[in-house]
Length: 267
Ligand code: NAD
Figure 1 (cartoon, protein in one colour):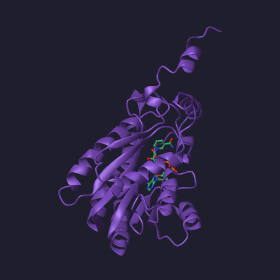
Figure 2 (cartoon, helix red, strand yellow; figure 1 turned 90 degrees about the vertical axis):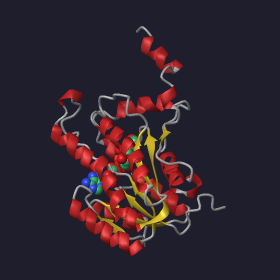
Figure 3 (cartoon, helix red, strand yellow; figure 1 turned 30 degrees about the horizontal axis):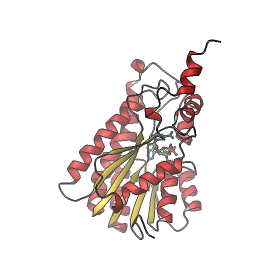
Figure 4 (cartoon, protein in one colour; figure 1 turned 90 degrees about the horizontal axis):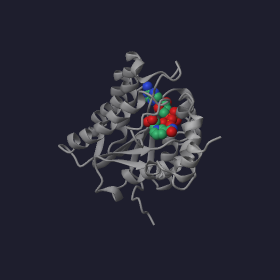
């Protein structure tokens, strides 16, 4: 049964870097559902990976922080493949080269660069691709499960994801003036990808998060991808302007019995 009703619909996917990428798994799920995929990636390595894993699918290259490249992409890919039914934005960048820094010492240059690539690019892509999209289409971005948990290692990216969450609402509203395009996000908890491997000291919070889920098992990237595919599909027609949290219940488990016992146990 074609539950998702995405068969033969064209979907453009931003953010595949390798087989671990959230975008890679979204693409796999969408491919299984029979969608026609096209990709925009950053750099030759990513293009090679997409060509290898999704042979025959058109692949474009675009640095989303470069306005001219963005416009060229919309003019070429947008025009060649319209009407595009879905757009997936699975892109983020933060410069963590200085290691874990106190939040109040965040460098302006780093913050603004991360904002440009991780948040503003979604706003720009929405504006540039909307004219090439099906009026009943959908856009999805990947956010984080909570922007109010002040994890020191994640640092300034959380406020940027908060801006992304808010942008989802504003885009849903502003696109509704011209179309019925829905805009949603998946608020994912900790995963194992190349991006997260670049977050200083990531492994310990990741292992902790595994224990803090209600099921005591790590969140799988495929589980995030499945929700992204659902939000893109007409089956989610009634969901708009939302960030759907996918965290295997972690947010409700602050007082996990085992974790509390370990924390208060006297050595
Ligand atoms: P990833 O490194 O596989 O994907 C990030 C992508 O962003 C890469 O494909 C990279 O090429 C792209 N990118 C960075 N700068 C770019 C630029 N200037 N122009 C174009 N593309 C650019 O890592 P991922 O974990 O799959 O990240 C995808 C999304 O998932 C991000 O928004 C990330 O914040 C989010 N997310 C990840 C986790 C996690 O634990 N990994 C958790 C929650 C949310």
